[in-house]
Length: 493
Image 1 (tube, rainbow, N blue to C red):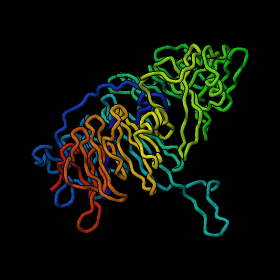
Image 2: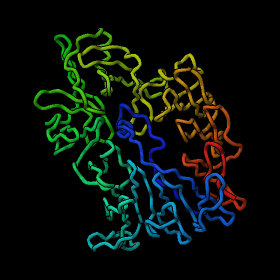
Image 3: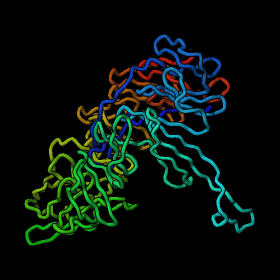
Image 4: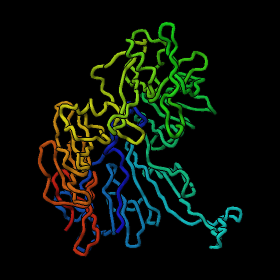
């Protein structure tokens, strides 16, 4: 059985107030939502009907092979016995007709965006045939994707393309700028009467506070929404930072190096003033001179390989890579816009993640000091998600090379969930609902961390934040249905 899960991205996003996950730096706009009382209910005949969430009485006679939750705007994706997808409204009326194209939905700013996607084999012209010199034949077709993305309420089509399978895909990763503007696929849109109109194209990077970067060849400019003149222009990528200390010039030539060159360099220099603006928000110029520093701090700065601008503060983060006891980590200093160097900056609330979402700063020793650890432990990656505040998922390997994970509270200095689990899945950060897996390939149980108790005694192969669970049925096949992750109530006969 295929499963349908609407692509609703508002549930869990990594906290990246100082990194490249742009959507976490932008304001959350209240959505125009409906009260949804219906849920997909699995019957004994192994099909789904929509039922009242409280009484579990069917609301319609329509049956589906599979069905999703309704969005907050009142739409759902269903599948018939032919494995065809459709989108319906709360009354069961079809708003996107049944077809073989897979459908995903995402609600942003009160609008429902849809994506239709199908894979197919496309006949190619002779000059694009794949000739096999080993004699196994000629491949005259290539795998393509037909993709359509639009607004469900107005049927406005934003994109309709056929692209090769290995080329870039398109996603419903719309980003809120404000209640009237969205960013998607390099374009800034204005919303008027539930329709989107393009107001800026070819945007390379979206920044906080309604700012964005546009590029032309190797030159970049920073703009603000509604402002035609650039805030900063004639910016070029740089790989070097220079600092003057007394009569000495310190050149940092190995800063922010990455395996793959980003579209927007992490250092942007004004070609006229030589001011350098730094990733992630490029909102302030890096100091050209060190006005206050100790000898040991100067020695540290000469080895710096990571420099980030700390958003909403006068500081920059300076990191020196330190490979210590099989742990990849950094040591830190800080410098402000006036050139004062300091060992610490107090309680600024920001976090730095790497490109795949793992925590870089604060590092493990800041989050989990050595006096609270076992000397035999080795530490792996650390995760934190929006809403977790002082809570961190920390991976540990003991002397027996057993790898586990736990939930640590850096403020209270205790394990809220002891590192006795193979996996911990975050389902709701605000209400602190987690799915715990004790052993590899084992089952998951629901846990209410706020009240320190299990939600139910039922176990599942997997549990999603939307409440979609998988179990093995009596015949050994995998079954799918929905539950309430807060009460454990199962929506099935």
